[in-house]
Length: 350
Ligand SMILES: NC(=O)c1ccc[n+]([C@@H]2O[C@H](COP(=O)([O-])OP(=O)(O)OC[C@H]3O[C@@H](n4cnc5c(N)ncnc54)[C@H](OP(=O)(O)O)[C@@H]3O)[C@@H](O)[C@H]2O)c1
Image (cartoon, rainbow, N blue to C red; front, side, top):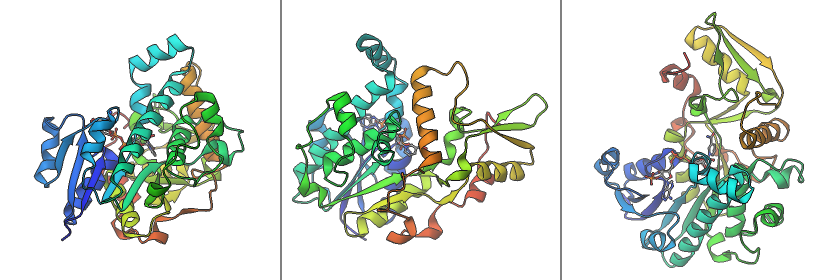
């Protein structure tokens, strides 16, 4: 048993929920942050002994309070809620920006609030783990510029430390969000980073980027997008995130790990699905282009993601990103892809 306290952002969501549940099971004191602790669906977390406190990533003072006494903090920000938000689309229309650019501003602002608040607790804090993604602009030398939901997380990472010394300049020039000198070296010395892989549950978004489409004759067609060139780092965030964070908290700081339970070609994931579900699947290579009629911001964002992951891989080829087995993750506890495919109902698809 441990009386150490971990404060978990996103405890009611996929990544944070996994972290909160695993640390509670391991006997840690767990404090989860949510905008609405009284939501009925949060009762299950309380039953595991997880304390839920109200805080908002837009409210720095609430974060400073919520981080009080933390030995470890797990932090995640959510890009996609912003691009779903009509207010973000209204701001985009008023300012002449794309909705995903406005989302970047919002997510980076929240990331900066988290980092500033964490840096106020260095007397107790020993490990800050931030869920980031790789820096497309850096690894493609500026060739791919619209993979914003990766790059804004890399900007937050740079705000913590000098680990990525040059990467965010293009984004900062575009968005003028903060100054490069405004950093937290003392917090950086206690930080580690998770680059979460590709959620197997992405098919639920019902986008042809992520899932096959059922045809009138009952067979399925997947738009292949060159995914065979690089392995997709598959992950089930609900189960696996806790194990990555557990290892990062136990290890010395300064590590970055790729959050994956198995790396495999994305096409093969769906071939395995077709075999398990007993359906016929055709894969047609369509390149990076999204279908006609896709909103412009979404087309720019997702084509950039696909191009980046196909040509450079999820981590951009960053040699410093460790595989889970290299940092002591309990590999046997991670999700088995075949079992996941068997148990997942694939409602709305099958
Ligand atoms: N899909 C993929 O393949 C993939 C891969 C790698 C990384 N990612 C990244 O994963 C991130 C999403 O993580 P997730 O899947 O864990 O999200 P999620 O399941 O949607 O959960 C979002 C969490 O964030 C909390 N939250 C949102 N806004 C908040 C605010 N203003 N103040 C306090 N808490 C707030 C929510 O808490 P309450 O609602 O309770 O307040 C909730 O717990 C995205 O940024 C995405 O880019 C996705």
